[in-house]
Image 1 (cartoon, each protein chain N blue to C red):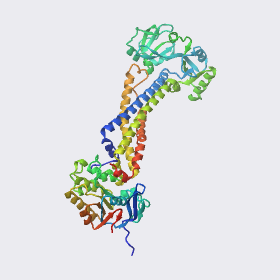
Image 2 (image 1 turned 180 degrees about the vertical axis):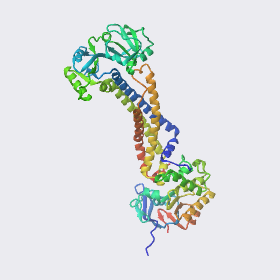
Image 3 (image 1 turned 60 degrees about the vertical axis):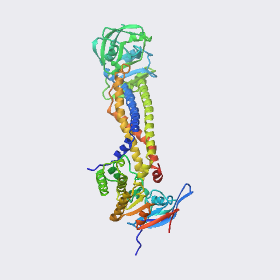
Length: 223
Length: 377
């Protein structure tokens, strides 16, 4: 019987900046299966966000490789294609576009792929309803609370039906009530849709609640 | 129906976000396109009026000096031209510009009293002048500007001329011109025996010979018989003569400078916009936008600036043309009409300007590293 192929695999990943003077990652290897929920924690500057960026195809490693379903990112599968079809990003600072209404923000990733305007708008509305924002569809980001903005950002991350959700400190800008709500939504999505959820966090409570917890220290995974 | 976001809608919202800067940029490109429409419209209108000058009188061919239009051609060449078998009528003329008052200058034509060129004008009052007499006739536009009527006098070069008639011309060049006896114009210009050229009416082409071949043959025969002279089809002369050529060159030259400034304005706006939106571009890349998509978005914004600015510019240019067509100084050579083709050309140039101006900012935006862009403050 053959071993199931990991959805994401990282092999001896290194990333350095400033002509090698700063080493953010120093040989990280790990496998992540489809539908897994994993938290990555570590101190500031430990390399956890760099690892998330490489897992999300936002950057290329200095050496080593990231495989998505056994295909190397950046060579077998293009980074743009990977980001457009397979991953959804959630950021600490939400990064909603201020000139667009909530429902328009959710449609932004869909503009990168073929499709008609009406179906894009219908999907955006359905996702926002799923986030409990049916009464905030037409608000601009500055008219929303921080928790609502992050929910719009989650809807946006789901827009292109990704298999993997990557969240970089998704509760970092939220109070405890909204943090709990956002984590409830994220884990709910992961459970219901069978998506892979990878969260970078410095909050122990969130990291420890994840079924799998990887700690990064000085660019390496702690044993 | 849910609220749809289109690619162009997204581009427009990005532009509208900095309203003042967008409006100033639109103003810049509108002025540039307006200058283009007005100046090129002006020069084309000038060319068009030249063509009408000949078509309305039925002139087939113009014989002038080979090098430049000046009043130095021997009037006696007319006898030779009239004797040529294919020439039905040859009429000498002088074409000149003159200051009539400190504010008003006008084209002054010198014609023979029996010239067939009179066929192109309609008398609104009075009658033709007579050769040898200090008389002249005025185009209705010019008469209005000078506030002259039949029976009044007009002083030219220190000599008083009686206005014997007011006419309406077949061309704006005639409507704002003075027409006077050839000999009188020669006298006040100290150009006795000299003319600017001859207008010819030709006999019909022999059967079996095309009009084109016939005109070529006639031109060749005239130039062989009168060395140093040039015979041109009237329509060709209207579009190629030095005055029209100069008007086109000035119009295109000035418009090009205005367009260059407009392009730099858009390029500056787009470059600043890309710089300010660096992190947003990073977000777009993180959300799956390819570098080509980012490039298209920035180019679309730039083209929207060009297109909308160009549309305002059409209005500005048309308004300027209308104004020029009413000013006494320019009414003689400008009509306010502008062809749809010219408008389409101006709009095309506006869009092209947007594309050129947006090229570098778009390239720069598209090649930002997503991670670097996301880190940008």
